[in-house]
Length: 130
Ligand SMILES: [Zn+2]
Image 1 (cartoon, protein in one colour):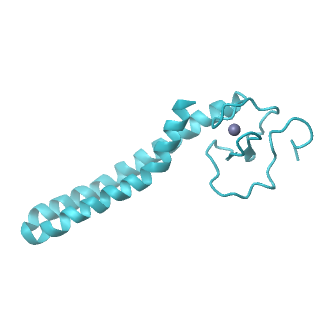
Image 2 (cartoon, protein in one colour):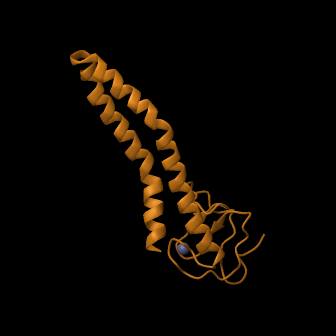
Image 3 (tube, protein in one colour):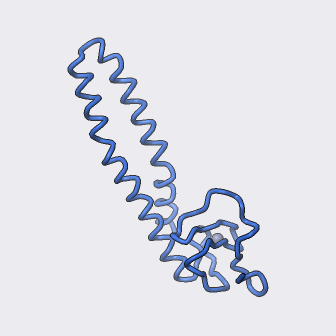
């Protein structure tokens, strides 16, 4: 599941990386406005033009993470810790791994909130189901 961890790290870290890139671009463009305004305006326009590509890359990373996780979950394994689940996952509900306590949304992405008490656990025996 190295591929899943790479995809998850990339999809989680990309927004911060993009924000850092835009802040860096701002720090470069702002003094350029006073030194050579046409270059500053051109860099500002290029930053604005890159926004849709940044959005597409972010959505692509999320889709890759979701596809890898869903494939592992449908195969009966937790994508995070690779343990085999004891029960079949219901693809319409949030799922929590009994080993690593990671919660997965129906689309395969990890739930970041920690409200996990009401979720079904992939446990052997009594905890699964409604
Ligand atoms: Zn797990």
